[in-house]
Amino acid sequence: MLNLGALPEVLDVEVLLRPLPSLTSLDLSGARLPCASFLTRWSQTLTSLVLYNLELSEGLVNTVLQLGQLRHLDISRESHRGSTFRLSRNVLTTMVRNLGNLVSLDISGHALLDHCTVPALQEAPGPPSVKPSDTNIWSLRELKQPLRFLGLYDTTLSGLTHIPAYKVTGSKDEERILNAIEAYTEFRPEIAHRAINHLFDIARIQHCSQLLRALQLVIAALKCHKYDKSIQVAGSATLFYLTHTQQLRIQSIQLRKQVIQAVLNGMEEYQEFTVQRNCLLTLCNFTLPEELEFEYERVNRLLLCLLHSGRQDESLQHIALHLCNALVCQVDREHKQAVGQMGFVTTMLKLIQRKLRHKTCDQLMEFSWSALWNVTDETPDNCHMFLTCNGMQLFLDCLQLQEFPQKAELLRNMLGLLGNVAEVRALRPQLLTPQFITLFCALLDSTAHGMEVAYNACGVLSHVMFDGPEAWSMAEPRRDAVIDRMWGAIRSWDTSSRRNINYRSFEPILRLLPQSTAPVSQHWATWALYSLLCVYPDKYCPLLIKEGGISLLQEVLALESSHEETKDMAKKVIEQCQNFKEDPVDFR
Image 1 (cartoon, helix red, strand yellow):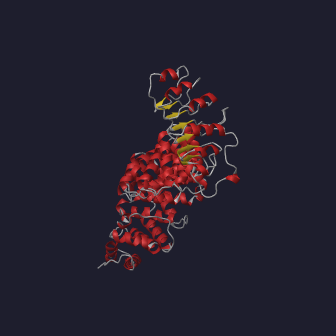
Image 2 (cartoon, rainbow, N blue to C red; image 1 turned 60 degrees about the vertical axis):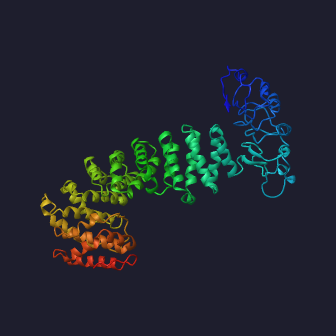
Image 3 (cartoon, rainbow, N blue to C red; image 1 turned 120 degrees about the horizontal axis):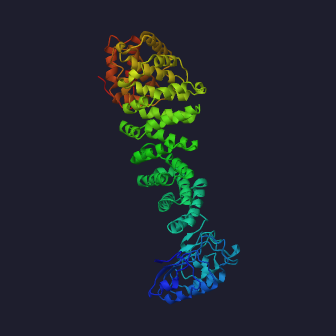
């Protein structure tokens, strides 16, 4: 295909083409043709002619009618607005008669005169037919056989039922819309984006029956036009609704990966609010973090970049924080260390600092603390980063906010994070100050979020106590007084209470069991296991068995220093596992 489309007006198309005696395919889209009669020179060789966005005239049409070897003719327009030419029934009929070799015709965007279609009463009955004799379009009844392709997008004919072509573009239904996206994406983005908008309406309101094809076409359009705002906005919005369906689950892993990569490409290459929002929302439609692990570093880098930029629109920050949380919640230590090194911890702390400057205690702050809780779980490097980046001071500053007493969820998140810090022996001395220990003791009496705040505060103290009396370097509060407070708190809790907590591993709890340094720490750990197994046996019995918890509990029973109530609870945990029927295990 020789493409001379949109040539500068100073260039003469006829002069350029004169040395080509055997021209077969020609694209003159948008070209200036004062006189087109010279095209008849190739009437015996020209089989494909594209005249997109040329203003048709009687002279140009007469010239085209003399090109009897044409198989592919495209006289379409971006829009009929601004055009003075109207396609008539007579012009179309003559075109079909004279160009008997046509297999492809595109008249999209043209205004048509009346009387081009068969009256409704004369319409052929039955399902859609491609037979020329059944068509609703008078002129196309002259066809000897159906066309392979017929472009009718943005014409009054596109909504007709009986059209003599195997592939039709239009906006009548999903099939014709998809055909339009496929036909116009590469060279007609101005039309493709309108077709994608039609697909958006179908995906949003109705059921998309050709999900695989729709996804592939939208992805192709986004790749082809990375910097076209209309394509990126329409395509990213459509991807959200195409993936917001259970049908996505049955699509191939490879296709789902292609969608994710298209979304990440959009986030990288088009920094526009609507596109960014659409991309973030689309990522939320996938199973997190599993389906994003193949691009784990890339997606986290993009999210942190968005959060670090300090954009004022909080809706974007909400979605990005939700994704950050989901991506670090259920992954291994290596993944968490990797995002910590990318600036995850420091970015969350900066978000919290920003909120503190405005004295605001809102959901964004809650999400930030929750993300820190997740990213520090069993990850000492990130816990150390939290402390070295002034995290404890931010913790204290948050407690001073006027709205804080009403934010039980926020307090739970903050205490959960400090529980992770307390699990790291090398970092515990930084928690062992009168100010922090007094605060944790006060929180033992908290009823915020059920008992979760008190439970987490007691967990922090249990790890501190595990280091023994020699590590207790302060006069006040006294160690024995804190231990008494801890015993009182644990005894007040209901083991059958529903828990709002999720353990991937019991290792931090289990290390507190076989020891005599701090019986209260041992009791807290045993209570924690018993409570979780009572409420969620199917989830936590297998985990405890897998991690060797039964033998450690048996050591608790053998220790003279273990309190009787601790031993009683340890026996109940062992019995709970022995009664667990899903995977019977011999503990002898």
